Length: 431
Image (tube, rainbow, N blue to C red):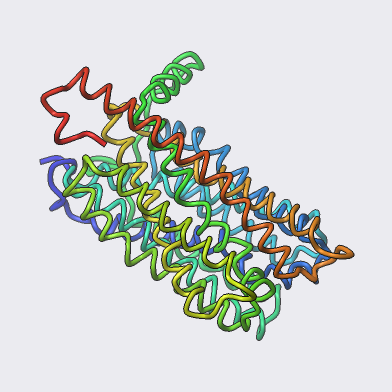
């Protein structure tokens, strides 16, 4: 029996665990600058907009590579691409450890983005190959939320490492983890039960354009795109760069409490993921409704914090990071809608298209926050005020407004398409 119908194949869970650990490491490297933002401004002598450029470049590379990586997975198999990503991440973090100028650090973060881009799609492909269709929504959610442990490791332990070991030794220690996982990947991971590594046919430029065009033409792909766009950026931006400075400088918390808040956000991500996986498996026709409800809750919590007289109390900030954290696994619903809206042969291209969305939104927000902070900070420098952070964080409303309009627009189109083409399944598959 093939692994697509039964997960009793020897090694299925072992393969998933190793792939998951590589993705976890990628999230760690992606998030490692979040608690080092203030240290980076001192090490490289940079302003807020320049600090934001680190994450901007990383996200830009990540988003730009999603479709090429999807095509690479189709051509060379997930095992080879995942191994390449792990090696690139390891070398990039080692380079970041030794970087002593802003330019060298930018180059290192560029390659961090490249390596990061090669992980998640590969793990999703392994899940789709080795697990039964009914298990895929839950396994996808588990992959996303457990991978967020990397952000926890990048929060408290990385803070302690930077305080006790310094910049270079902390990032070298982080880079060394990639060596161990690369070896495990080579030994354990297989693309298919019959072969260790698969290889697909070479595609012409015309065929690539046709596949991407057909995927984008599906309203379900576009619905998945805008769901991913609207739900992820708030948590990603806090976790990657601006959360720690916002809590310390904008809300007056201690550094320890700021690290705790970022950790709680990741715990919320991990806790909500399995619940959402169960919910969308049980009620697939309410997937976009669930997403819109979560976005409304995130908007409401940010409004409370930004409108609070003075600095918000600790319990309000805890509620904020919990609600914002739920947006992470909510973004995974976009992949499930893309999966059910496209044939198997277009799965990689559809996944790549959707996976760009949240990182494009995060990129826009990271840039905007840096620019607005520089604009609203008296005399420039890095002495950001609570008022400057309120202005900067308010840019999120622009992205939420755009996302909500587009989600509503494409859920109407997706439902109309299902009604026209598969009226007998509408009640079970409507979004």
